[in-house]
Image (cartoon, rainbow, N blue to C red; front, side, top):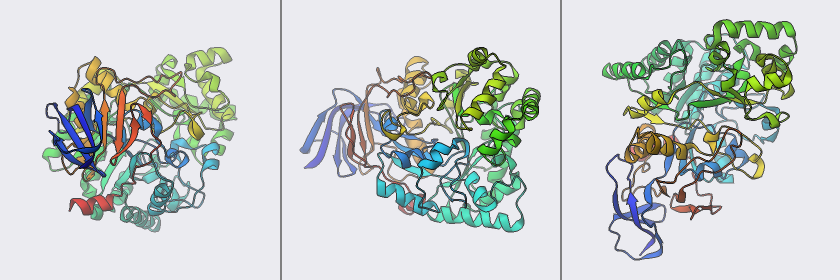
Length: 542
């Protein structure tokens, strides 16, 4: 007898092969049988023709701190996600600097006050998550920003030889304790300060552990090809695989997706292991302060706010943005500011100005009777730097080209939240709640860019294989029972920019390590997720 039999389902197994009708049996945390499951079971579910697939693996997320605050991962569960990969864009909760963990674009007094920091490196952080229990599986990169801050504080200078050695030592410790590799955020402070040699030296420190270099590149606009060349060169110099995060091009590079794919193809022919992922929303989001020149952010939010109080410095910031846009560093969406497309920039998560969330800066500027950039500066002062924004600077056409490439995965760039509890007030990008549902709704059902089987492979087998997640990402006997049951005809993202705190529709059952996290569409309260330590995955794969 097995524990559970799921009968009468359409199995899409994650390999990209055509779906087929059958049953799936679960015993403990493993898949015991696939196909015609004749064994009796302690419990049975009649799927009624619903599609059964491996639980979705979101290869690019930022739940490093949200899972500490609320470990349920509710917004991820409702979109069919069983595993998230965090520590991206140079932002990780470890190693911890003398003045606390590196928060990067998520820096805020409110978040920092919420955290009870009782860890110093990856191992302690992983133990903390395991003790409090999490609803989803989670793996982590070590962020360059965290490493640099721990070794150098907030210095914008190039590291001295001792500082570089200290950073390499810190990277090695995090890898020993279970990180998957090094990530960078080269448009964020302090990543923007680092040159190619610094990053290559740190990426090389992951090589003995089988690490991967994952990068939010230096540029996604006019200089995107040069930025990709730098990423490839770092991988070659460090002798590690490269994974380019959310590679989707932005103005004026719109339409260049095919050229990016061609360049990565050339690198692979030359023996360099390079892959990428693309987000699937044309509208993105990050910290509002990233619309400022990087020098304005030096020293943290308090110093930035003081600069913004000075009219002369504020004017200097605008002149530089107007002249150089994203070539300064910072968000790609400064290009929209250059173009005067304030209608494509909306205020996001904030506290004192929450009534303006979802309104464009064209409208906010008109309300305040000031230039939209002045409105951005004023809101940053009022929010003490803790605000985000949305901006539409990508195209579905580029997303579709990238999605079809066999070496490009799909990641949400979101984070795990919940509509109630300590994170209930957060109004982040709809991708946090819609994510994978929006992917299947838009890329499969509406645009027909990928078949259902192809899209499922992109968010199951592909990330599992890339990261070496043993036993995950496929439906087969002996695999770990991370499984999702959903209706392909009705799965949908219901979150919006104005009201993002709405769970996705269409996911009926979700199993995380064999335990039901969703049952007939409702959360069970189970916290059966695991912290995935790369060192353990490597041992299991050996």
